[in-house]
Image 1 (cartoon, rainbow, N blue to C red):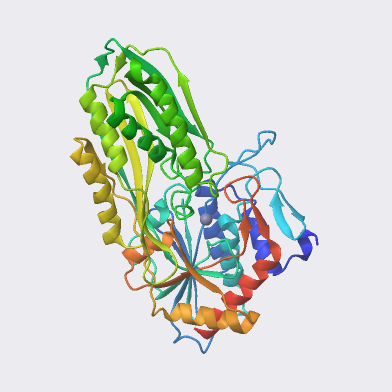
Image 2: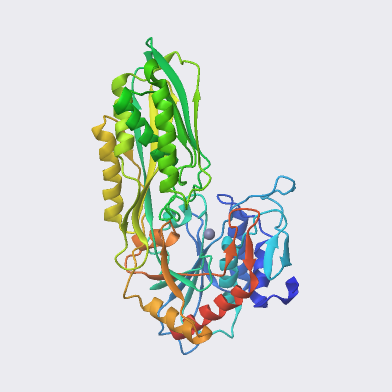
Length: 481
Ligand SMILES: [Zn+2]
């Protein structure tokens, strides 16, 4: 197959046009202008809101004016990642594509099919007069990838449809009906470091080479959290021989399960051999607990030079106790579908300056009330230990609607077209649908799309055959809703 043979030709032609237009997140000006020009050339009504979201409407096919208005929605921005050996300016250069083994790839950069292929389907639909449908609103949001700010900035009333199809999912054959909202909870411990007293021995403890993963999507995969593992040993050592913290640098990104954690601790000289023995026993226990999901994790204990200061006993005790107490991982499963409903991830623990330890965590739930409950559960553990705690504003979730008309039609039409059942599921991560469900209560939504792999990396690729399947499914829904 070469690029001219890909079907539906109209969708791939639009995708090729979109890939001429630079559109990094937060730099979508050229894409907004391109969409407005496209609407003008095709004599379609359009509007742009103050955030930069674009809505192009298309009237119903004659005879179908009484159908509910359907919103088709995708995001216009793309993640810009490239291989080191590739010369590419994402603010100027078009994306170069090629076909291999049934997949469309880019040359050393992200492909932008997330979510350019969704935009391409909307554009193809807007100019296709063989398709039967009720009134349509095609919405192109900006800046999904760096914080959903386009959807967040959209005002109630901008869209007027009663049903919305989000075209930003990555597995053909799966229909998404729920996503998680999220927020961050930050705790700060302040103290005055103490000059290291005599008689202490210093050790550097490292837990590393864990699998990690996305703090939402992967939270139910029974992967270990490096920060929580380290906290276990710290707590045990504190109880047995008064282990004290001298430094801690653990975890990383707020939305990742931490893969590595490190602490420098001080223990009384006479316990240094005991600590080594305990560390090895601890490592063996944990390896046994996670022998399936974490086969490569490593536990290192090294003697290290004494630091000039340590955490005061009281501060060290408060921090270690809170780290042991704080809830982590899956908290509740959904009542409606097979999906994590609520979870928390202890993302990072860092002494950012002498006398200040900052702890970051994130909570997710498809239920807003339980997102708050989870954040409070985490906050309470840190507050009991005397930390200053701040819960961020966060973003809303999208709760499954067991009575969705749109879902019913989508499932029926899928079955008819392909003779099999689609998978109806949710995702324990953020989607723009969460923000729409907050601003447009009662909006009936589903999300689906063609199969993508390696998204957000130069390995991003689009399975060509699935575009046609999604396109046919989409047309069948529009005709039958
Ligand atoms: Zn996307």
